[in-house]
Image 1 (cartoon, rainbow, N blue to C red):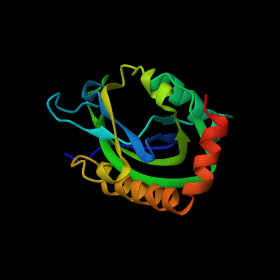
Image 2: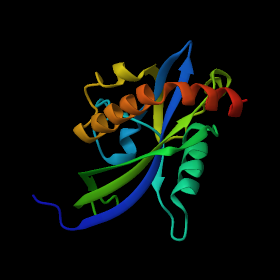
Image 3: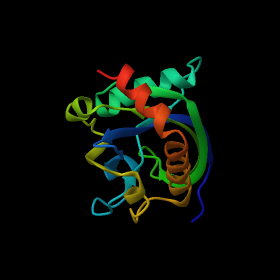
Length: 175
């Protein structure tokens, strides 16, 4: 049966990068399927904390708020990288049990977290577990969607092109 309505939303999120021994690692998290009406045994990896932009809220403030809420840290935002990803999925209205289509645009930035900061990651109930993997390895996660992999490839290009300036930015701004 086709979805009965369409919900359009704009979200913002952070691609959390941790430079560990000179290797950029990316935060990946497993979504809590109960929240999305998917089977519990289906493992769905996500590429970073994100959430809807509230009315009157700036994108950067949404990213800071969502990162703090979902992973409990406040990484340093790189204002020179921004990418948008669009996707759609079916959801189920818990009150009516009817399916509806969600069209979402997510605006991502890179946010740098130190080794000490990633030790303090505390997930919200939206996610079940996390891991930090070298950014290239993130592309190998089977449950990531094409749009998410496109974002990761752009992150890789940006990190490679700007590695020297990123290292100095991280060393001067991270605790």
